[in-house]
Image (cartoon, rainbow over all chains, first blue to last red; front, side):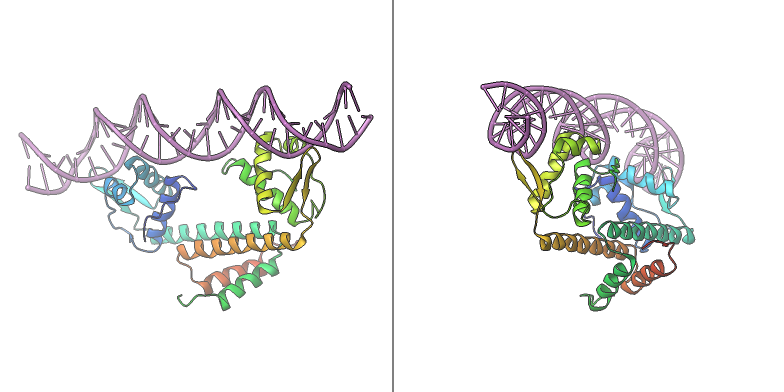
Length: 126
Length: 126
DNA sequence: TTTATTGTATTATTCAACTAATACAATAAT
DNA sequence: ATTATTGTATTAGTTGAATAATACAATAAA
């Protein structure tokens, strides 16, 4: 996982997304200690305040907790992490279907497009 | 089709999307004359410059052409419109799959989620 | 006890992008 | 010829995010 910050959206929002994915993928496992805000900021090459803002949002979701002078920790509540993953997936799926309907595709056509992508798609991996 | 402008993305970008959809859906049919920039702007309740910027982008795509002092017209090239629709669909599909993979879903799981949504989904319409 | 490291808070500044107001240009309509 | 309507251009203002600098607070580590 690398910090691939684009210029098309707020940096802090992208950090929320990336770190959330890191937790979902167990790159930062449940109950583990995160690097310090300053270290994470240096690693991502962003201002510490920006990183702090992103981590604050994830704390608001309950995925992270802070212990002052000690550090920040990933929640040990694996079900909460799983629920977060599902929540994001539902949002993405809904957004995708809405966009496709706006492009005048019906549900059957959407399903066929996805099936086609999954079958003949250039996916050696997965 | 209504002008449902949100605050989360640039207004002009949303206008490009909406007007593009209107052309794809033949609300603005091929070869038809569009309302004036000022009328469209009033209808969408945006600044004329913002509407002008959006229409300029669609003109860059070739979907619209301008005749000075006369107005703007949808292209008569229906294949170009169809290609535009396909292009946007491919982008959306790619974006969706990428996001889902980032959330640690594999292609099979993605397909299953879409199928499930299409079958039992709350879609009386379509 | 002292020092270093942690999270947190505050304030100001910069910068880019979007929006807005207005003026200009060209020509169809009358 | 005049007027109204069209697209276009220019300039200014507004807004929000990101950065920056700094300070504070708490405690683990030495």
